[in-house]
Length: 253
Image 1 (spheres, one colour):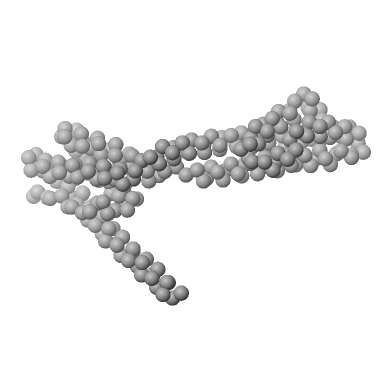
Image 2 (cartoon, one colour):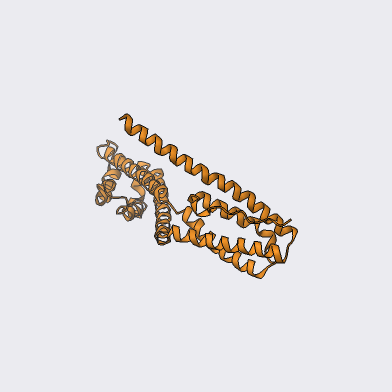
């Protein structure tokens, strides 16, 4: 027995539900791929439009990387502060070898004074240079004398983490700029247009080339479409309840 395609206002679905419906329907079409040329062509366009919509609904967010950059910069500041504090503490050390080591390192560290107070972007190269200075042949013996090797290693590791987080954020920002030019509404309309073309073809093939597979796909689509109808109806109720709640709050003020 021939089934008709169940229609519903797909354009009224919210962004997440919209993609979920189309993605689910696309999976239902798998058994029909390769059986009808026009359908294959329509599904190919559908796939491209869906891939674009998927990119829109999961736009990159650079907030997490910004937090990571700040956290690792704070770690660098603390490590540099610890090194500086150790050096200052030994400037008046009665043990001559330690006092001389601290005096030398104070001179070497003087160009980096106040580095922790500057922007973490502007200090990126300064912290790299600081590690290089502390690892230099000139500083080697003094560093060993004061035992600050572990702090220098940790600072070098933090520099690497900062660089990686900065690169990830730069990549995400580039992706955000690229996606910002994509209009969500236009993309949704193109997805819907491809979907309607596919459903039109399914109805046509159900008449001229009926098969159990076609009948099953149409039946599964109708079940999915019925579920979406319910979701759309509930969207309206939720919006109404929200509006009533806001009105009630305003009246109560």
